[in-house]
Structure formats: structure tokens, C-alpha cells
Length: 433
Image 1 (cartoon, rainbow, N blue to C red):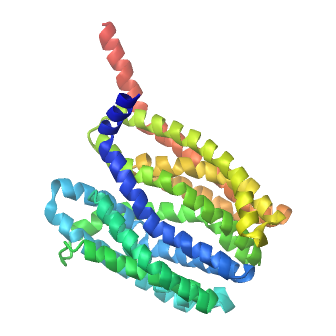
Image 2: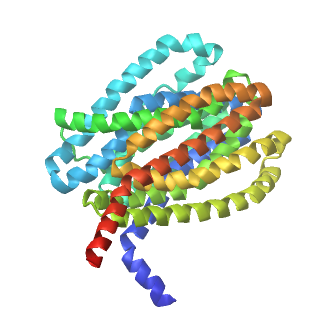
Image 3: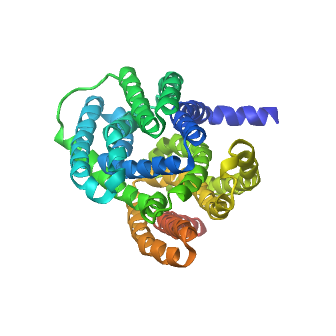
């Protein structure tokens, strides 16, 4: 048994180490975000907590258009340029950052001009978070650069250091200024994190390169459209609840959602860590090995999803009743019945989409499917809301998750591995001959 474990460790040493460092980095970044969330639960009342999450949903919608897949696309091209063109590598930061700056300026301008018409009395809260429209995409950009260069250790050190000095400032802000302090805490954290990431990676040239902009821009456009679709069937529930005036219900929904997001982190890390190797397999046309990886990680994600879902189903109500008794109501239990199935699906998508489908240039399938089912989620939410009230909005998201994920996997498997079966059959015929 010992020799078996040692052999597996040596065979997957790089992946294991990168996974460990990436996990530590996530603790520094997402862990602090989760810490802010926990502080808000404890220090804000139900109504203010609902407004906080509603405004965050709006801001992250704006951030999505400010980034539009540039940070994710940059990670892919960083890995490629690092292998074949070191000069391009030095120009990526500036050119990607320039694209993000232009987009965020446009988004900010539209928010300031159109925002008051739609948001009305809640518009003032959005203004407090406007810096985040630029800060969040830029931290994601640097995150992608570090990952593309396999600098997981450096990324982890920066994130942990920033997280440790930020938490005290964040606690003071929320404790002293309530809802406004919670919103400002997001800006402060992302600003300090961005400065730390810039300090850790200063190798860049301030030269505009149209070829880099075109390459990253074309690929990021597909990812960005996919992100729009993903938002429509994942985060739109919060906006729909807010639109219909269910501010308190948003508190319950986001409580469960944030716990699920935190539990999904290990599977997202796994996907990010295995992505570079799967990109390499695809580039070298080793489709048979890629197919084996797809099946392997799909089975692993299904098994782990079932186990974690069962544990969470019994454990969460106990945690809430002990530490958050004000949330221990029938509404939370109603939402849990639906959202537990969404979590199960997310375990698989976090691993397969991040680790195999996106890094092998099949983002377009995710994009097309996400947009189609994301748009479908709008009328479905309204119809189900008419019959089932706020539960109908959450149920609509579950249905879209199921339809979208099934469609993406089926199309990817059939199109990517079709040639593999043909080659296998041809090889068999040759052997028989």
C-alpha cells in the first residue's frame, strides 16, 4: 500500500503540489470573501444583508462585462507564449489590462447614466462599489497570469499575506459602518490584492501589440458570451428575487449559495490544475488519452458530488441552528431542497468545464448552450414564479443547470471523441488484415 501511494505521488507530484498551493491561494482570496460574507451575516440584519447581496449581484454582472473573458483567455495564452514566444509573454499584461480598462470605463459610464432609472433608491449603493468594476477583473487577470506560468506557490503566498492583513480592516469597516462598510470592504480587499499581485509580477512591456489583442480578444469574446449565459442561469436568481421585492428571501438564498460556492472551491482548483496538461494533450492530438481523462474526472466528480451533497444535507441545518438561529426557518429548508441539486451539478461542471472543455478550445459549446438556456431561464422564472412564488425562481435555475450541463457534455463528448472511435476501428481492421 505504501509503495502504491508513493508511486502515485511521484507520478502526479507536480499536479499534487500545484493543487496544494492553489488551495492555499484560494483560502487567501475566496476565504477572505467568505470571511466578509460571514461577518455580514453576523453584523447585518436580514434586510440589509439581502440588499448587500442584491447589490453585489448587480456589480458582478457589470464586472462580467468589464472583463468579458479576458482574464481567462489570458491564462491560456500565457501558457502558450511561455512555451513558444517569450517576447509576447512580456507584452500580455499591458495589452490585456488595456482591453479591461477600456471595457470598464464603458461599463462605468453606462452605469452612471442608466443606473438611476432602473435601480432607483438602491442606485446609491452601487456607486460605493464602482471601483470594483475595474479592480476585480484586474485581479482575475493577474491570477490568470500566475496560473499560466505555473506560479501557484507565489500566487498562494501573495494571497495569504494580503488576506491576513485585510481581514482586520474589513471587520472594522463592517462593525463601524454596517452596510456601507460591507460594500467598502470589497473595494479595499481587491485593491490590496491587486497591488500585491502587481508587486509579485513586474515583468511586462508597455507596448501595444495588435496581434496579441486580436488573439486574446477573439478567444475572450467566446468566453465572455459564455459568461453572460452562465450569469443568466446562475446569478440571475438573486436579481429576479430583488426585482419581485423578495429582499429577505435573498438573504436565505445567498446564505446557501455562498456555502455551496465555498464547497465547490476544491473542484474548481482541481479543474484549473489539470487544465494545462489537458491543453497539451489536445495540442499534441492525443485524443485517446484526453478521452480517458474526461471519463476519469467525470466519474470522480459524480462520486464526490454525491458524497458531499449527502453530508451537506444533514450538516448545514445543524450549523445554521447553532450559529445562525435567525436563519433557521422554513424558507431556508425550502431553498435547500432545490439548491442541493444545483450544488451536485456544480461539482461536475467546476471540474470538467475548467479542466477539460475550456482549455481544449471548445468554449463555443459552453457559450452557445449557456446563452440559449440562460435566455430561457427568464421566461421560465416568471412562469414558475407565478405558480410557485419565490421557490419557482430557484427551481427555474435548477432546470436550466440540468439542461445546459447535459447538452454541453453530450456535444463535447460526441464531437471531440468521434475521431477517436474511428481511429480505433481503423486500427482494429488493420490488425485483423
